Length: 94
Image (cartoon, rainbow, N blue to C red; front, side, top):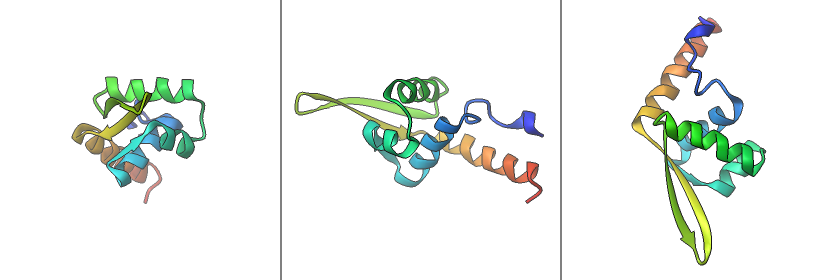
């Protein structure tokens, strides 16, 4: 059963990012850093992996003269999260 868990989501930071985006629809990089309590480098790496899997969309803009990164959950990401939660429930016999 454990093998059925999504390898993309089976990482604490990625799961935290997707869990946050399920509730908020979109969040900027600074908010995700606050939520995940991780470093800039690690968060950048993890959102890149989520983007490569098609689970999130990354929007790069500027706020004044500063880069501003916004992440949005895709429908593929929402479906993967829902399936992940169902598989966890089965694994835990809930």
